[in-house]
Length: 237
Image (cartoon, rainbow, N blue to C red; front, top):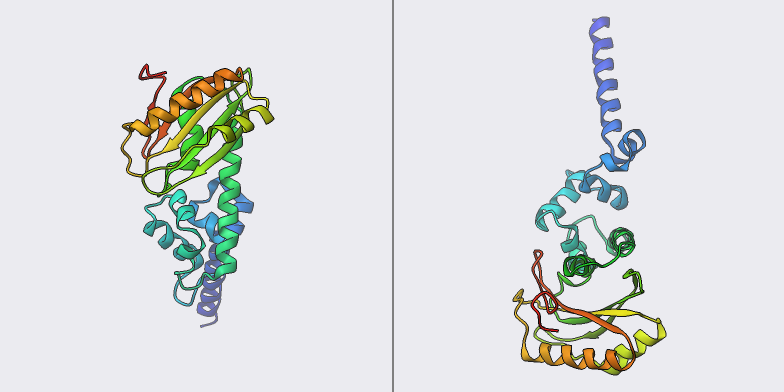
């Protein structure tokens, strides 16, 4: 009888120990953050689940709802997170802040590398623009070594267009002493084909850059799923 009690106590102790080691914080301390899944990393920020659902299970359910895409969680914003029981505005804001920090860290790595092709430019822009439901116009400002010295949103529009102000673009280029520039905008429709308005903006910005001795390298139309259109690659500059 006493032996059975000891075995039962040992089993409980083992289960408790195992559960503690499986917790994201303890796992991170033992194995490093790279060993954690996306759900476990999110769970560290969220902190606690709800009765009947652990915090890891809650975070995995959120990821499932967003097709395992962290970018889609960012796109859904605080409002998208607070629809889940157990996540209030404070937790949602904390998670969004951590995701934004991760995004900025990634962009620092991307922008350290020279832009040598339209594909390089697209990868530098897609996280900023690829998931938007409205059009935006951006510029990538480069130095002589073709490294990004600045990325700037120049215009926000509707679902079908955004208006580019050439004077404002020139001011940014001059103030940042840019040697060259890549113009970019997104198509929420995911149609890479440029419109007549896109062609017009390309020529206006190109002409203005020539007047101030800034190299106009390309105009990229950013879409989702790795799709984009390059005026340079298509011989239209």
